[in-house]
Structures are given as structure tokens and as C-alpha cells.
Image 1 (cartoon, helix red, strand yellow):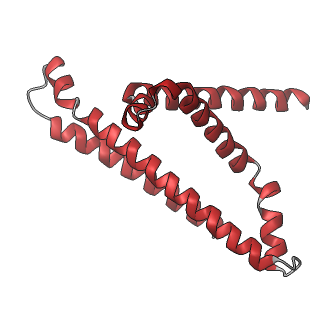
Image 2 (image 1 turned 135 degrees about the vertical axis):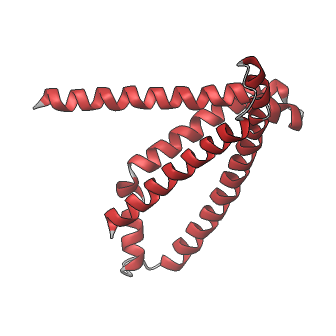
Length: 162
């Protein structure tokens, strides 16, 4: 009985480490953190940027994994009228959600622009691999694969919960 749980924990930790390593590799390859430090003129605080990135990732992880124990009881008590200061909590939630949306949008936008710069390297890679034709098809195949994966994920989750 314990062996099954230990194996599941090990697989979860290994998968999490691989994904985290991949994400931080992309950040390193794109040069997102040094670019932020250069744009803001705070290159001497680069370790602070990296620490905040790690802390933000951990906060997102904890919120995602423990959503039922963190947010659901608050939502239930507000929706059932058990909290007398429910209006205050609702307004606070919308303010926090607005800030989260703002910073998440900035983050995704910066990351998308950085990845677009990597896409500019696609013709260079094609020359190195001696591809005379098919760069557009390769880029279209990458985009179509991303679209298909996203549609499968969202529709599968939609029909699973319905």
C-alpha cells in the first residue's frame, strides 16, 4: 500500500522537476530576466528577479495543488451567506484577481515576444540543416500542433466536467 504512494510521489516529483527545468531553461535561452533587468536599469538586482520568479512559481504551484483547501471554503462561505463581511471579501477577491490578471498578462506578453524572437532564428536553423523549402510548412505544423493540443485539452476538460 505504501509502496504505491511512494512511487506516485516519486513520479510526481520527477515530472515536476523536469517541467520546472524546462521552464527555467526557456527563460535562460530567451534571456527574459537579464532583459527585464536591462530595461529597468536594475542589473545589480538580478538575483532578486530570479528569486521572485522562483517564489511566484512556488506560489502558483501551491495555489493550484491546494485550491480546494485554500479558496473553496472561502467561496462556499461567501456564496452561502455565512460571512457577514462577504461584500468586502468579494471586492477584495476582485481586486486581487485584477492585479493577478494584469501581471499575468504582462508576463505572458513578454514571454510571447521573447519566443517570437526565437522564431526569428528558424530561418538560420533551416540554413544550417540545408532546408531549401518547407520553412513555412514547418512553422505551420508547429502552430497546428499547438492548436490541436490546446483544443483537445480544453474540450476534453469541458466534456469531462459536464
